Image (cartoon, rainbow, N blue to C red; front, side):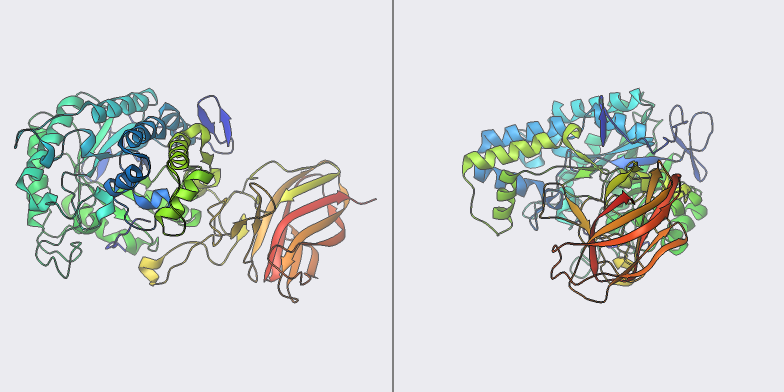
Length: 592
């Protein structure tokens, strides 16, 4: 997971993954974006609220996205791959990765879901050679790969009328001591230790601005992602969170701005403070009249206090603010954050669209051969054979394609619909026509307290100092509800770690009113667990005892007879009066 210090406390249809329960929010903005006072506006002067997604992992891999426990810089990942399958096959892996990870179908899907912008984390080495590799010192060799990929992405965004924000995520030499973020090799001079790296960074931005100067669907230039460097006290403040002057950072951003403005007077320039984007000491006031302040927000409370510092900057310097990166949390946190941001007219870009993991809209599937590679890399297994490693890695690269991704519609629903309504919707259609079996993990879509109730719903460890996980099982869905994968079969899941007063709601369309028997498939190590069944707020059965079954997946059936259900929509709630049990399924049958 990304390491930061926070100062500011599927249905596959054609090429598009569609979620029928979500109404897209139209992108009404037109023309070049610009900063006008404290707003980002389009050419009509209309306020534009950016709702975006970052394409993390495409041009720049971080180890945690691939399941690695340590050594997460991309150059180290590449070295590890080469040691298993050789240089030529490693090049094939990265070509396959780049051609599959982000495609037109990803952008079409983002548009269909309701997003209106995309943030592209760029690795400089796709656009130019490293300083150490230049044939002639001080000259810049330009590479076609990065520009071609960016051109394609821009074309997909234009076709969907979505803004593309260019983000230099890995600057020449690396912009911080959080090494994974910028693929930095600490054995070489950093961005801040090398005049040549700084000149190359300036030249790259000028080259990009020359190329895209007349492209209105380029939303802005995010010129240095998450700088984190201690200039004044590098030993005690290596990430720059306590930096007071930030003089080298400000100077480089001014130099980049001048180079861009030499060729491009139109596009917004987005700046980020030190300390992972949030320390603006010594940087303001702004030096350009078309500039936006970016900040990043992870794992803290979603209250006004958590964003007040950036709002104070916005008000004092009359400059727009944009949350350039956030995410890596639960659906509850996502909904809270977006509600807070939009109430304050702050646009946002989430991180990331996809990875190996469930707390993003798309999840990359793994495979058995890659799992063996991962175990070896993480010190838990033997070195795999070259053939198996090659198969596993190439399959992983192909699995980055959206056509094989797992769609987490609950994540998209939490971001696009739930910030604006407490209405619940079925996760899948449940129609009771005589009999029905419901997977317990398929409870309704909606906010905590409306579709379900859970006591541990998000990770607020920056504010509380205590880590929390939301979904302790880390599988299937990203709400606070704890879900684990079952040993019983492929893609089987069950609810676990159920606590007192927690409940789950299932919307059911009943064909015929009448009496029904309900069987709960449960497991428990305790003998005092109790459950109640409700239809909305009406209690149908109260404090039914759950037997001690002898294990987390030692299942037994608890039958509750002669429950009355109405014709049409019913909202069945399974509520834990006393927790300590697991729930796998709910069976409903017409009473004779």
